Image (cartoon, rainbow, N blue to C red; front, side):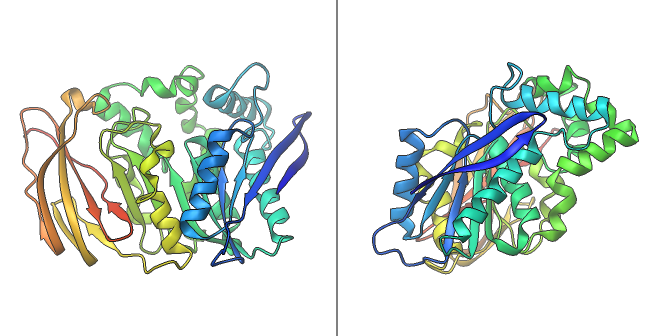
Length: 355
C-alpha cells in the first residue's frame, strides 16, 4: 500500500512524503508496525530491504521516504539542516529548524497507519533519519513501543563538541556545514542554547517509555569513537547498543542487519525475549542469556579511529566474563560484540590513552 503524507507548507515550501507499507504473509502481529524513516524518493533498494525485514520478523514494515524534502534552496542534508539552524538564530523564528517538519512527517505517517489499525510503532532510521527517529520517539512516546536510531551518536551536543576539541583539537571535518556557520560558538548565547534544547534528543530522554537500541559504526568520522558515553546513562530503562567493528557512517544499510537491527525489531515486537548485555568500561560483562562474546581492539593515533582496523583479540562465552583492556603507545579502543541465538548486542567503545 502507498500513500502521500502531506504537511502542507513549511517556510513557504510545499512538503510531501511517500509512505509504503509492507504486510508479510501470515503476519504474527497486525497491531504493531515498524516505521523506517529514510531519505530520497521511493526506490527498489529500500523497498526490497523493508520487504525482507517484514518477512523476517512477521511484522508489517512501513517506509517513510523524502525525509527531508530536498534539495531546498540548492542545499541538501547537513548543509540544509545547518542553514535552517542559522536562519532560526538570525530571524528568531522557532519554526526554522528542518528537524521539525521531518518529525511532523513521521507523526503524519503514524496518523495514516493508525487508520489501518496499527496501535504502536517501532521507529528507526539512519543518520539524520536516526536523529529524526529519536525526536519522533520522544514526541510520540505514547505510541512508540521501540526505538532504534542508527548512526546518530550525537546526543548531548553541548558535551559532544568540546569532546571533539579535546580529542582532535578541532571539529570533525564531517560536520563542517555546521562549523563554517559558527554554530558551535552560538551555545554561549541564550538563543543558541535554546536551539540546542529544541533539536537535541538529549533534552527529551526522560520522556522515552520504550526499549531502545542504538546502532553505530566503529569508524564513523562524524563523532568521537566513544561519543555515546556522554549520554548512555541518561537513557531510561535498559538501553542496548551494537557497535559494528570496521564500519563507518553507512552501517545502517548493512546486509547483516538481520542479526542486528532485525533481531532487535523481532524481539521488541514479541518474537522472542530480548536478552540484556551489560559491558563496563573495565572490560567486565554479563548477560541474561548465554552468549559468545568477542573483544575487538583498534589503535587510534592522535585519537582518530575512523581509519583504524579493528581485530578480535579475545573471545569468551557464557553469561559473564572479563576482558583485559591494555594501554598502548597510542590511544587504543576496545569494544565487545555478543552473539546470542537470535540477535547481536554489544558495547560502547572504551578508549584507553597512554599514561
